[in-house]
Image 1: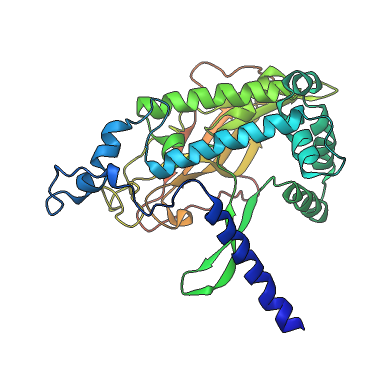
Image 2 (image 1 turned 180 degrees about the vertical axis):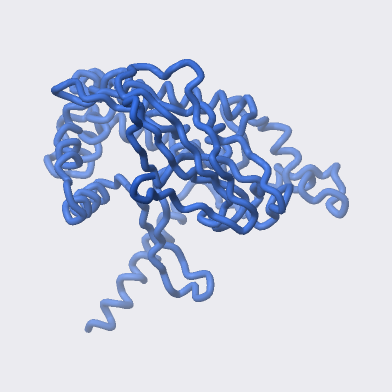
Length: 353
């Protein structure tokens, strides 16, 4: 009986499909012969022979970067889905729990812009509270798991893919989920188009953070794609960002290291020359005059596949703790640069130094 049932269900499905095809008014096509450009010689240009007439009659729309029968069918399907969703949202008589009622309510809620704008970030505040309340690794893991439940893939993403060596297996696929701009070039390269993208990105993120209730200075600081040394001042009730020290770091600017390879690494496609992208291993000392000298090791990026092996630099800067803006000419200076095959890890003090 179980075997009969197992055979019957696929058969029923096939019969239903066959019956649908049988009553269809439109004949099925494997290819459309009218798409062929018979003026083109197939042995000279088969692509033009196979697609020439269709391409001539269907120019790429201004809103698209590509166009084909498959792409056209995809856009047509989206239009049909849009009609279905609009009809479902407008149908107030759909039975509770039905597919029409569920998709109509979801779609209607997403498209109710006035209500979304009126609520602002209110629906997100419980999540902000959970994130703020995570004070140890266990609590952080719990928040991350809850975020993944609502498909907020941070700080990593998880999916599935076929095993390229054994296609019958499906493997868990983990990836980094942190960058907002497409790739490294958008953060570091000096070309005008990348510079424009960074400026617009910073303005966008600053606006989003201000809408979320951050003050203007904190929003601007958090939105920076370039990393420096931020100075925060406690006013008795809260911490406020005074300024960010970046001068002298030459963020994103490649520099020469004697003996280090020149040009681009063929394996990564990135320039070998290292460039500073942030600071780590920070330490400091209060001087006799009340100023503070801070030392740090630069983190760098280059064409090397192992970023921890990039030649880096030891830098220092002296700042006035009472200042609310950088002094004229205040900038990082390079104390020492690592040579080829050398990596700096930090600075330490001996008693009395």
